[in-house]
Image (cartoon, rainbow, N blue to C red; front, side, top):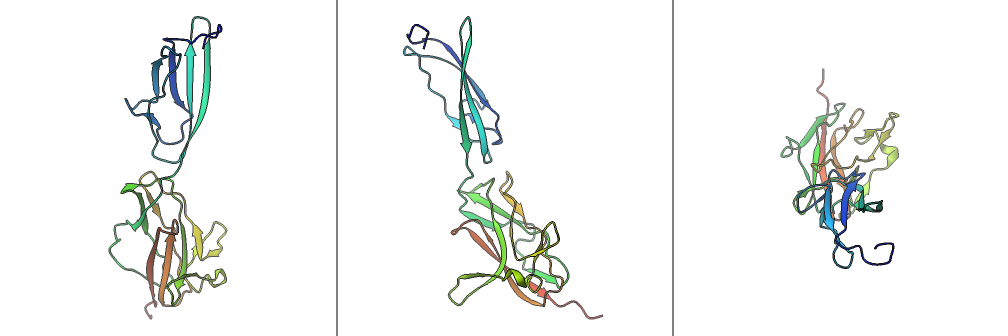
Length: 214
């Protein structure tokens, strides 16, 4: 709108996506992060459709109008939320094989893939924990005090953990399981649950065998 209160018709408006942490939120029409528009007879412009970046984050949509004497800018904050994961599968090279290790040897190289509507889901968070299922099939987490009697994770301070929050999935939807230690763990079968939500979880059976006798 002009200073006299009348609509600013045929005014150039530049839209831009700034401060983007989403991996590339862009305008659908041309795949660019800016667009140049002209106001209509009522002084209005319609923001073209945007395609969200590949990961959760934020961006600022800036609209700037220009005339002979000045420029006027308004900004709008935008947020891209993580996709709702509907499937979690094991995805490492040995995904089709059973997980078997000798006591004292950590479980390594396990990787998972999270997808939403068959597309990799970036930014999804999961929790991995050791436990068992009761007679009714309900998950029972291992007692944290039992870490060491069951396979366990090690935190930065070297403390033994039966449950660990994993880093968010990468842009390809994948996440690596940190080493799962078995030093001092008795031979037997153990269950690891990787859980993203109530409806999305994966159970992995881990077999620990006795060390060969010298």
